[in-house]
Image (cartoon, rainbow, N blue to C red; front, side):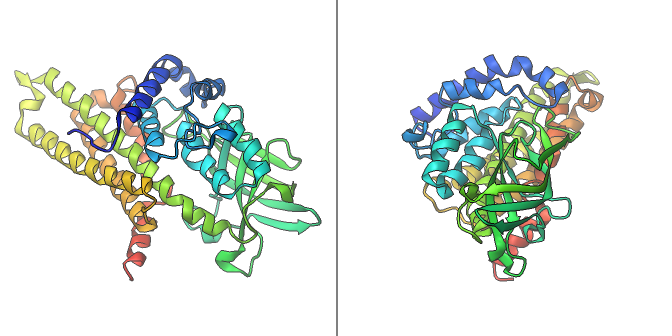
Length: 379
């Protein structure tokens, strides 16, 4: 099914991204998977050809192309090959916070660093006792003169090992409810800020995930990101795009799984004929193809809603939970069709299967997001 949401200039960025990943990333994927993170030099090379911060204003080193669709084609290509390169993390999660909340000094320093690939960021929300429930965050920040003193810990932080700084969600007023959260830019090397072990994950092993610890970390007020007490509302503004990004990645993974499964079903024979000729498999392939065709229309609609600035929190939550559940349904069914070979790591379907499981968890679990949508319906 053809897609009508992209213009030729978007497809040119897609081709550039694909060529870049084929040349600079995929040859190293096996080694990156073993070491648990990509080589950070890959980000500098991505910055050199303009794949970072495309929507960042030119005065901060970006391309000034304020069009979400450019970010989408980069995300899709990063997901398509399972490269492990977190361009999406920097483009869709980190840069938007600084672009929308940062002071002039913060923008000049951090946005310029992100677009060149010389600075990598992560966002530290989840805690050992607070995942999807952001109201359960306990990491605190206490004002002390011109500084803030941070204490607490974070976990499941994507890109945390390689990050030069973290956007840390803290509680600055324990009695203020949603108005008691504030964001800070905590930089690697600040006394008391420590990175824990690289977490040993089931999938996405070329992308590092970390624990972060804050023990009386003194952070200057100049590193406060946004207004005091405005952290929760900043998260609510940015989470819809993050959640849609997860849905986009999920759809690409499911489409790739179906693509390689259809090819396998034509080549693998059993009882004298290709396995795709058996009615049970033919019907399964037909059903998955139809569902993914519908999903593509749904997700492309949401992409255009972001481009117009119209995607609501409820719509994004719905897209994320529905697509991640469909992704798992499709990928698991495709793996079944490979039989025993699907369980062998050298087969691509095994990697897609491992990487897909977390999609139903991060960015808000399916259960939490369904509840969010329900509350938006007035229940």
